[in-house]
Amino acid sequence: MRFLVIVPTYNERDNLPEILPAILAQDDRIDVLVVDDASPDGTGEIADRLARDDDRVHVLHRTGKRGLGPAYIDGFQWGLDRDYDYFLEMDADFSHDPEHLPDFLDAASEGRIVVGSRYTQGRVTVVNWPIRRLLLSYFGTVYARIATGLPVTDSTSGFKCFPRAALQDIDLGAVESNGYAFQIEMSFRAWKAGYEIHELPIVFVERESGESKMSKAIVFEAIWKVWKLRLMDMLGVL
Image (tube, rainbow, N blue to C red; front, top):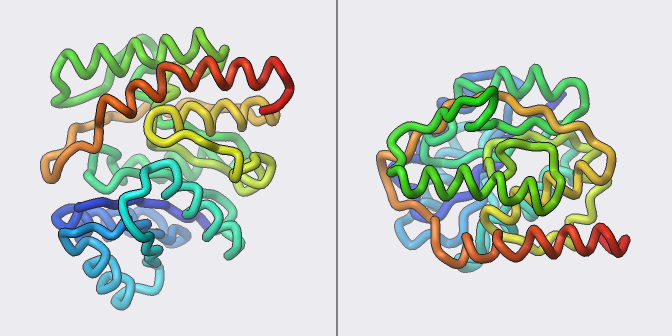
């Protein structure tokens, strides 16, 4: 089986040379696709250099800062065209620990969606977040679960794995969301397509280098998007 870890980047020049070797060291079946949104700090050029040195590293350059959701959609399509079996979403800033990857690979082998969860078994496993952001994230997942009925405790998690069949059964061209809402929408569409979602406990650590991409627009999108998903599902137009 072949696994593709998709790493969207925008101004991650300090993190990229560290995170890619750490990802590849976890399993020989893993390849990495860096999807760079024309980072002005030279991240794309660094990714190209790393790809020249290792044939398991690939780079997809996009024109301009077009957002997280579209970056993953482009990455999924790139991997589907090259016959990968499983697709993993992962941040470039070490907030998602590469050492969790073997657990993802084991859990994904049964053909289900695997979500790296910060809020399973009644525990919160987040390090170095201010309490305001932690509460926003936690209650945001509760809100999304109530609005959509999605049986996932951490629906906004960006550390997850999809089997190839799930991405083929989802109309990727119809996915509209970007940040938190993108993660909710992808899980919701997969769940409605009949796929089981397994939550894998992870420890999430706030980035040490670079800047967070969080914004008010991302939060507001998630607030209204969950109700649109619920309505589309009720109308049978999801």
